[in-house]
Image (cartoon, rainbow, N blue to C red; front, side):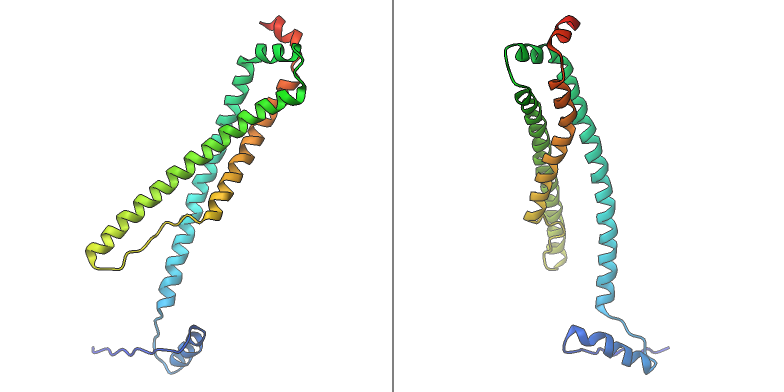
Length: 184
């Protein structure tokens, strides 16, 4: 069986659906590069959702770890907190001390995560570009980190740091110095 194909070029992208429908009405089969691009976009969309799910799980685990670290830190430093209260430190200052520690942990975790993720993306892009060069194709960048994403991650890390440190900070200001000294 001998098949023949014909390539049709349109002036702009908006004309593609109309031209395609007219060709199909004549009884011909049509293929459009845009269909392939849409399929690839859908696959990458699913891939992004899967990676986002892994990221959400990692965020929850990190938040639990930070909460645990700050709570244990409070328990180990209960005598220090009691002493600070007896020396006249205000409740707000103690709260600020623990929240600052929490925000620092959150921000450092966010920075380390962004540096690691960006580094892995850079390495993957380098690998794909080398493969493209060997095959004679144009170099492409698959993984891109927009600056707004970095700001969102930084803000999210601070938010997680605040929420994981709020309870230990609140518990620290509620500590009765005399009970804490009796406990020791």
